[in-house]
Image (cartoon, rainbow, N blue to C red; front, side, top):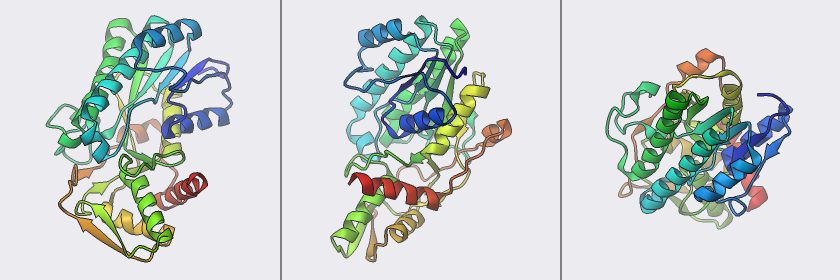
Length: 308
């Protein structure tokens, strides 16, 4: 990417989009097009077309999406499918129509089958049944990957896709019901500490294994791939390290300084038992993560305290 190129970051106020913006600024890029969701509703096809016709961005980072944890994914199934399909279709198609040089689409590791072999290789996509609780979101993200591939095949568009593992960090969503597991635990343990609660209840058995990547590392990988990678096949982004939900909870409890007990509600769903990405392709390209989990959670908690 040229330093003076016009760059559009869709979703620049979210955790991933804001991390990408920080990374690009640090690398000397300065010509950004930034629109909030109130200024530009990406679900509105005509509005997106008019925006691209006027601005004609050289490069697009498609980080905008309707996202949430296991509860939000399961409850708002129609919205997670419709909104994400609409956002992707509108931005990807307009990028083609108005000559965007390159687009990066951000997917999610939930695209993989629930019981796929571990660690998850890129070629395992569409090889089995998805996790039911987040199937609508996963189907939307799979459609986004395939749309980028199809526009590359038919129109020779340089559209690439990346699949990040579970992300956390600055500007995360700490909503009591709709957040992902790591920020949800930060909020619960913080509130339990402040209110001197005797125990914190966590959904599920605590046994599922999860991989977590600091959002600024994800942004670093995304910019790296935008600058160096031009192939059709999508790329996993992760750490190749995993931790049980139980051990994650104990780590967050220690960082926050909560002294009470942890109780597991096994009547609630666990979700996928294990979800570790194979990142050998990305490592082979020359990129590795740099932020360890404890350090990243400490940064995220400081950010949480600033805003709550």
